[in-house]
Length: 141
Ligand SMILES: CC(C)(COP(=O)(O)OP(=O)(O)OC[C@H]1O[C@@H](n2cnc3c(N)ncnc32)[C@H](O)[C@@H]1OP(=O)(O)O)[C@@H](O)C(=O)NCCC(=O)NCCS
Image 1 (cartoon, rainbow, N blue to C red):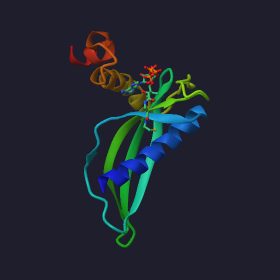
Image 2: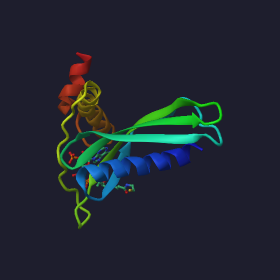
Image 3: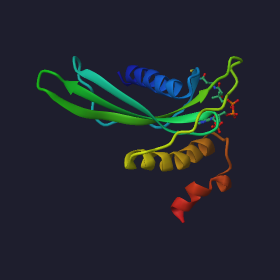
Image 4: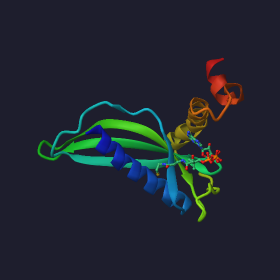
């Protein structure tokens, strides 16, 4: 069931975010998830979660999910997604998080894209005016 996989992905992403900021976190949003390939019954599920960028109190997490057929010994991509988590202080208010420094080319690509993805999800969530999303607008001009 896709819902159970999303539940596991939420946990993996929460662990990744929480380890980065060393604080409890809550799921603020989940971007669209499309299932490329089903994970068959009895196959192993691999979930890799990485913080792509830290903002003020929020962090974007990128997840990659694979299935593994142990009998026939092959791994296949199932899906990927972006989650956003917010760090909380002891009073459950958002608290600032440490910045992330990307190192590899792949990390730099995800880091750069995170700003545009953040602007898009904040616009869709009614928390940002489209005219304020400079980096997103630049993509279309
Ligand atoms: C997520 C939550 C903490 C944000 O609190 P808030 O009072 O709206 O706080 P702010 O407006 O100051 O936003 C805090 C951060 O959340 C981010 N945020 C808010 N809504 C968001 C959304 N829809 N998508 C992505 N990020 C969002 C903001 O961009 C901000 O990040 P920043 O500090 O890095 O710029 C609050 O809405 C909440 O508790 N939601 C319920 C969470 C929940 O129950 N999750 C499921 C169970 S774990």
